Image 1: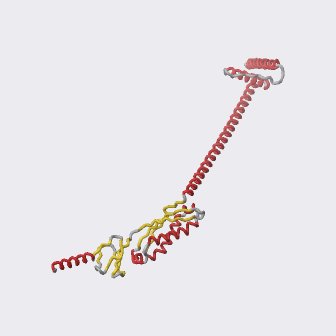
Image 2 (image 1 turned 180 degrees about the vertical axis):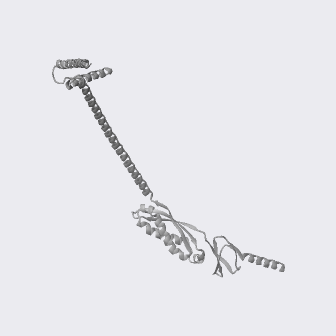
Image 3 (image 1 turned 135 degrees about the vertical axis):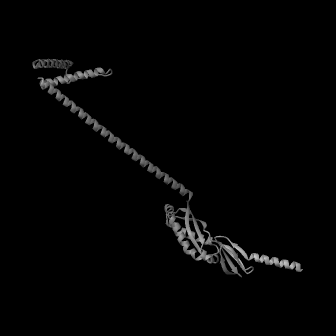
Length: 307
């Protein structure tokens, strides 16, 4: 019997000795109770407890954790929308006791506060404002959670509104409104472009007309100057102004006939100056040719006298 008793005692002592040691992982806190009463908090590393007296009541992670809460609520313009709020939190190292003993289900507590804040803030906003002011909603949630959870040993690091999901029909209507707005803007741009083209074309035509008129005026001015010089030259050789004018008219007449003769497909219509018989027009032309011959003879005589 003694041979069986001593090995059993030794084995029990060994098991108890081994159970006195335990390891706590990094960023973790272990709560030790002695006879059912809180005794101490152990941090990471190799730790020692009294077997059969002390026990590990639980462990809390000191890492930053995230809880995603999906909230459905109504906006000011009566649109139902679902918001996804992500809460990042952690247990405060100096308040592990409060986090472990004061609160059983921290996730449920945080979720309740998120629902309360979101359903208080979003109904004050229109749907468009919810998208624009989502950061304001996140700040309101964080502020409310910090005030509430700090007493329980939890620190709210960050709250984010990560998703805003209106009803499918509302999203379709928003897309149609957006498309119509863009089409309106495109039409306005096209109209402005057309108006600019019309204005610039009108300006170009006006400038073309102005330059054309200026060219005609310059042409007539030069013609008048040339006629004036021609009359002065003829006056210097003894031909009076009336005869000089007749000569210039006849010369221009011959130049016109010559220009018409150079064109193979040109047509010429001669109309009388007055509703008289065709013989009068012919007589006028003959008189013009005669005057031209007389002027030419007079010019020759004037040159001879000058010699």
